[in-house]
Length: 179
Image (cartoon, rainbow, N blue to C red; front, side, top):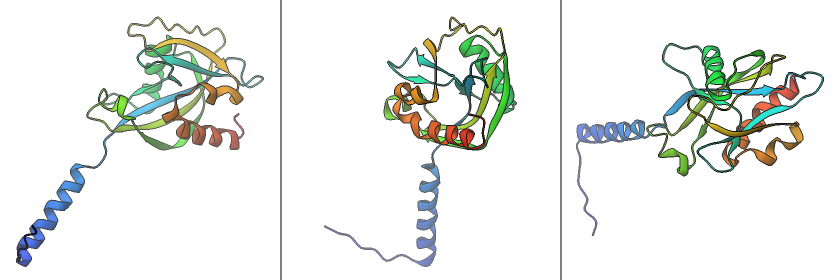
C-alpha cells in the first residue's frame, strides 16, 4: 500500500538536503598511496620489470606500493615503502605519472582495508641502482617471491583488479619513450 503526503516547501527542501547528505556520506574514500614500477639496474639497455607475489593473497602479483603517511610527500613515501617492502630504497626516479590514479578494492580486500573503498595512487618509474640488493625478508614481509619480467609477460602475472591501472600507466611511460 502506498502512502502519500503533502510537504511544505521547507519540508521538501529539508528532505532534499537529507538526500544530499546521504549521497555525500556514500562518497567513496580512497587511501593515498604510491606505487613503484621498478626497472632492473640493466635499464635502459634491457627493460625488465620487478613484480612480486603478495604474502596475504594467493597468486596476487603486483608492483610495490604503500600508503602515504601524514606529513609525507609522495616521493618520501616511495622511498620508505620500497625499503619496507623490498628491502632497498637504492633507486633512481626515472619519471613520474602526471596524475593520481584511483581504483576500487575488490570485495575480498575491501573488508581488510576498511574504512577505504580503494586507493588513489601516484606512480613512479624507478630504476634499481647498480649493486642494489632486493630482500623480501623485511620486518613485515609483504611479498613471498619476486621476478623480473619483460613488458610482454607482466599481465601474465598481475592480479586482475590492477590490470586496467597498470596498462594505463605503462602505456603512458611507453608513449613518452621511457619503455
